[in-house]
Length: 135
Length: 285
Image (cartoon, rainbow over all chains, first blue to last red; front, top):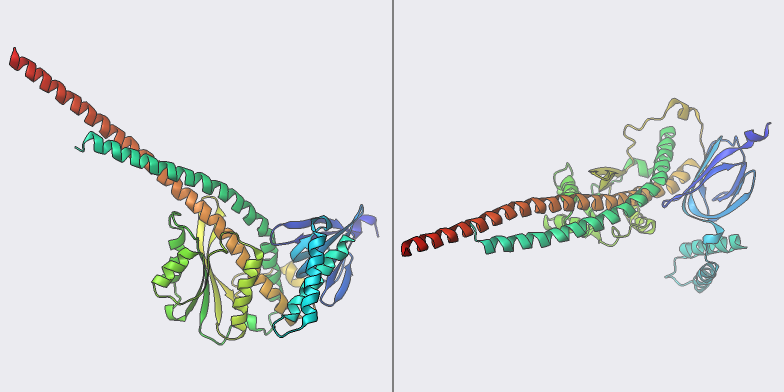
């Protein structure tokens, strides 16, 4: 297959802006069912995103971004990620993420009836993704 | 004819009002620019959200899901988005009219009022207000929309409400805004049709169709709400800008009318004085 045939369109859209729009040869992201990687001519799929790192590979560079919650629509030659929050590494405040991680861990450790465990775990995962992408 | 002093006083009062309306117009112009940019930026998200949901539901006609069937309760929730401040022409009353003059029955409604103007108008008319928030419209955030949509969906799932509507002002462009009442849940596809090409694509869902719908529809509702908030904020400033613009030009007209009257009165008083002097002088000689 010729080189240019591997390229497909990637769009990451958040409520505030069009986060990324461009070409890619591969995109990897995290779904509720686990990590997946997508090449061109993937079978059409709609899937729910989990907090994680999105890696966009195109011919010149590899881009990484943190994406939390949303869903992805995969068509043969186009992938659209509708994310509630998406951030580039340089937009993340590492100290804040660390603090959020500690807070969430504390909340999970205490485990009294008042804490919303699901929310705390979700916050922890978000913080961990932010820290991971910073490194 | 009114005395010169009365006319003068009237004129200066109108011109100070004009200064206020002029300043308000400038302020809302600036705010409009900001709100417009926000509305435009959030539009792609909303558009692709809408097309995804339409294509999902269009392909999966057999899916049986509470979000598509309607709740058991006869109660209807209506989210009413208005502004916190007046002086925006018919902006607020047009939205309120959608509810008071629409087909919805008063007894069945639970009002979720965003913005204090709509809250005041509807609670005066005796509507049941379930929820009120006036901060959300000042700075629309996605997180705010999320909180509200979670509350609504919770009530929907518990069977407290059977249908959810949204009343807001759609921002077409700077000069044209349209009050709109749309049905959020159960989802009404209406006339949205899939093209032949789209129908051919066999979509897969992960985890499965129902769980994916479960996740995506709340996000769809939230994005609609957020979109409505942002558009309403833009419409509000647009409406205020127009209202203040016409107020300023009306003041201009009144001032020029009063200037004419003032000059006539001045002329009249001079003529009268002259006549009196001449009459006095001829009486002496």
